[in-house]
Length: 386
View (tube, rainbow, N blue to C red):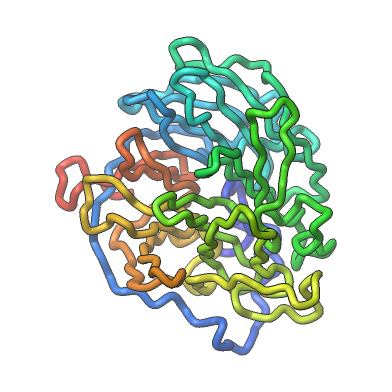
């Protein structure tokens, strides 16, 4: 599939604009090795919803044992039960949906079952980033249309590299991933600029009346999806690459230490980018634990460390995939902070945009083609071909 088709809507065509300028011939280096994985067939897929408009997120809300919550890129929040999608909130009039802009991230307060608070991240009609706090109805099935308060506004210089993920961390803060502001090769050098919020992972204590966003990680290109492994206090970040390399990062959360640096735009994966330097001399870089080349995909979609009960062979494995190829991989984090035992699943999710979990912690997937899928045991009669 050519870059033009690849970028046609792609709510998670996270590198679409940059990819359109790619295709230069380069001599492969040691940093350009493909991801070597052994084949695996841990699960099949069952289609559980269709007819959605470019879903960018699927997950569960605390206390909601039957619903799946879904974001559609043009601006609707849906609650899906048994394949039926009901609109919980329609904010399409205030959302600017483009190639990578739109309604991108959602997080429920850890005490959502009691306080009904949740958080949304979207691109406004001008393409700028907004994060706000909302409240759901008493029964938790719809969302009041007027935000309780706006928590963040970030001017976006271009339409791509908006990041998207919102998630609560083990420290109780709300985390947000933002891309570098767009354009190829971080032309404004924002990712290494600690005075800019672009190209960072940020966190804020939403219990404060005036939450203050603090830097957690710097040197990111476009962290579309990240997740926490609370068992080991790790943060897993999938950062979309530029010309050649997609990367998965594993970072130990150390709240009393300065923000760690993932290296962009001085590095793409482990490849040095000519003419780009680390902003601080002597600054160390946390290099990725896994990478793959654009021969295997184009846009990494981060997942999470599986902890469900349905697939014992997947327990404690980090699952991730790719938007363009639909490929799903898993790996194991080692005690030394590395990764090993990479496996590639037999099944694929076309236009994969999000890997989420239901109320039981079991795997669900969103496809930009308009469907949701659930992982089911191999050979399950409900299994279908995506």
